Amino acid sequence: MLKLANVSKRFGGLAVLQDVSFEVQEGQVFGLIGPNGAGKTTVFNLITGLLAPTSGTIAFRGQSLVGVQPHQITRLGLGRTFQNIRVFKEMTLIENVVVGMHAHLDYGVPGWLFSLPGFRAQESQARDRAHELLGWVGLDAKAFDTADNLSYGDQRKLELARALATRPKLLLLDEPVAGMNSGEKVALMDVITKIAKRGFTVFMIEHDMRFVMGLCER
Image (cartoon, rainbow, N blue to C red):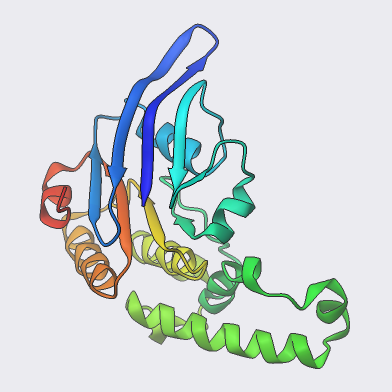
């Protein structure tokens, strides 16, 4: 499904990655382990188009991702969370998740400005789907709360729900339990396990060995 071959990345004279090669198979829960500063997040930034490799190839379902814009990569079916939480704290949980769907909505600016019937229908469907995804991560009871009222662990779950809203074929999780306590880690492990059982392919980078070993097949 995802294949990296001899990928290297340099920033000036500094080699951050050197000849990285691996393949993620469809249906897997795949983990990439390494200490902080080892270049794990750089791998995700290369895959999602935020950075370009110095050399090597990156392909998703046989299509090269090198030179493809991040929003186009999202439309191809790669969804991502970030190590540093990126939720909109002044928005409700529902609104945060709907933001993740906008790459697939087609009502356009006029529909949004004038609240045309096509906009209203799609927005209603998007909100229904957002509520469903919040249920997947155990946050449906808080759907209309603002994100700034959430605990740290629940903000992580919200970001996961928003990544799922992009309709990913491959879900990329960047240090999903960074900063969490043990109880929050157990809860998130359960959520990710259930998501994988729904048929999602999951690729995570993490330095918590126990968490990775409890989830990943490879």
